[in-house]
Length: 321
Ligand code: SF4
Ligand code: MG
Image (cartoon, rainbow, N blue to C red; front, side, top):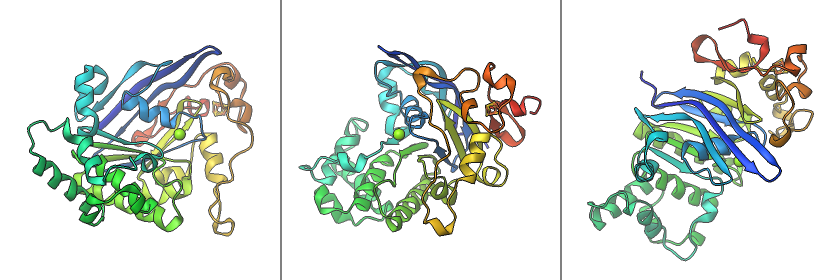
């Protein structure tokens, strides 16, 4: 299978008054059509920056410094701004965190959906665009009557489905959803995840789910990417991640997962996430790492690709791969 998404060497820096912060550092991975990736990490680890960089929506003082994001053979980084505008939604769709709360309260759902794609479909009639929107509502299991409704008439879960419906209006090859289930109750979370699954299968897209709940992710994704301080520290299948996590941070995340007794609350791991403005020398994780070695304090580990495309960024594996 040809990967539908190939990210390599992606780098983002924020130039702030307080200094330069490398928000993404040499991030790379690939996904096949129909694959689902869960991207996890503490807040500030670069998950949302990753999504914004892939969409080329990083705003000043941030800047994409390097890298490529190849979707179905097209490097998004090489497109001009008009080409990129067209690629959003049609090649790669992004459902931002809290999208459901940014639906316009005074506009009907249908009008908002049509607005989202109108400029992409200059030759399609109003009726055809409307039919497309109604089909999208159906494919996220919403009643077509939702088309005429206002956001306040919908539950949180329904609004999140509307956002997913907008995301699939142009059959993108990659869908990125940032915290799609936060602020939803457990039952609704599961339904939204299942909806994402169904639409993904229908259009054979690759899906990236950003979140911090490793436990919830584990039930819905094929692959897991663990971010730490702007770096992708481990990328593997969900099975590999849960049976043999390699990176010490990934291991700590798995070990800290709640069991059935403590109600699914993520416990976190000891120590504070580092500020991107003052990253520890060498491996940024070294002050919190239980396997720290001398070299870790001065030499930055680079991502290494091991067997089966799994990758890990840690000196423990310097001789592997
Ligand atoms: Fe720990 Fe060293 Fe690996 Fe960093 S490189 S995670 S400090 S063992
Ligand atoms: Mg975020």
